[in-house]
Image (cartoon, rainbow, N blue to C red):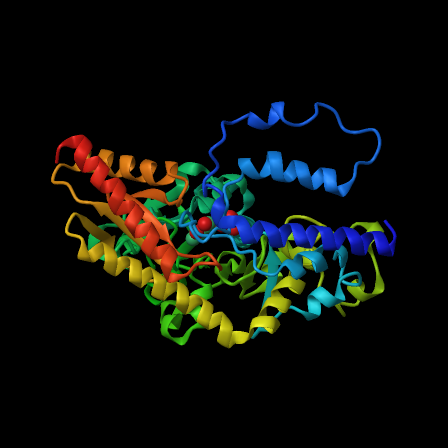
Length: 461
Ligand code: PLP
C-alpha cells in the first residue's frame, strides 16, 4: 500500500467506525445469531486475488456485525466493560509498531513507562499473564531456599471471590491445584477475605509441613466488587514471608480518585500489583499494568539471553529488557496508547469519567432500592450494582432471577450478566460504557421492571 492508498483506506475505515458508533444503539446488544451462522455466509476458501476494502467492509456490516455482542454499547451492563475510546489510537497502533524485542529496539516504550521507588512496572496484555509472572518469581525465590524438589509443598492463598486467573496461574506454574487455598467469604464481611481465616489457614499448613508461598488480595472482585483488607492481609504476608499480590484489575482505575484511594492503604506491603486500564481507564484492549517491588526477582525467573539478541545497550545494563519481565519475547507498543490517553484526557477528565460511572451506578442502585420487589444484595462500592428480585424460597428466587436476566438479555435492549455469591444467584449491573448517559440507566430499569411484571403475570404472583 502506498501512502495515498494508506490515507484512503484509513479514511474509509474511520468513516466505517464512526458510522458503527452512530448506529450502535440500533443493534441488539447481545448477539442474536446461532453459533455457526457465519459458516454459510462467507466463502469457504481464501481469495486468490486481492479484494476491495469496500467489499470487505460490506461483509463486515452484513455478516460479522450481526454476530457481535456490542461491548461498546451504552446498553451493555455485563462483565466489566472493555474500553475503546480513541479511534485515533487504533490508527497509531496499526502503523507505529515497535516490537521491543530487546532494550535497544524499544527505548520509547521504556521511556514511556513509570518507575516507582526501587520497584518497576511493565505493561502486559492481561491480568492472567501478570499473575503467572509474579507466581513464577515467587515460586523460584522460595524454591531457591528450599530446593526445587519441594514444589509440591508450596501453597497459594486467596478468597473464594478471587478471579479464576489465579487458579489457572497456579496450575500453569506447576503448583498442585490441591495447594490452592480458596478461603470462604460471606455476607457478614461483604465478601472480603478475613485476615483471621487467612492466618488460621497458614498456621494449619505450616503444621502440616507445607510452605506458604503467595497471597492474592483483590480490590474490586469480579462477582460483586468486594475489597479485601490490603493493610491487614499485607501484615500477615510479611509475618509469614509470603509474596503479596494485589489484583486491582477493575477497581485500580478508580483509585486515581482521592475518595477511592483508601482501598489501597497498605499497598506499600505489596510485592506486586496489577490493574487493567483497558477495563476502566479509557484504554483500548489490551493493557495491564504490573508493578513489582523487586524487578530482579521477575528477571531472575524470566530472563533469556540468546546470541541473536545480544547488543551493547543490554549488555551494559544501559536499558531495561522488558522481554525479561513477561512471557513472550515480542512486545506490543502498549505504552503509547496509555500515554496518549493520559495526555489527551488529563487526570481531571479521567477522574470525571470514573465518577460519572459511579454516579450512574448510584442512580441505578437507588432505583432498585425504591422498588420493594427488589433488593441490592451486596453494598455497592464502585460502578457495579448487584441486585435481585426477592423471594422467600431460595430455589425459587434463583429460578426467578435467571428468568428475569434471560428475558432482559433476549430483548436485545440491554445486556447484563449474573454471579452467585453466598449461594445466591444475583444479577450484575456493571456501568462502564463510555457512551452511557442517565437515560440508558433509566431505560434499563424500566426494561427490568417490565420483564419482572411479565414474570409476575406468568407465575400469578
Ligand atoms: N481480576 C479481576 C478482578 C477481574 O475482574 C478480571 C477480569 O474481569 C481479571 C482478573 C482477569 O483479567 P484479564 O482478562 O486481564 O486476565
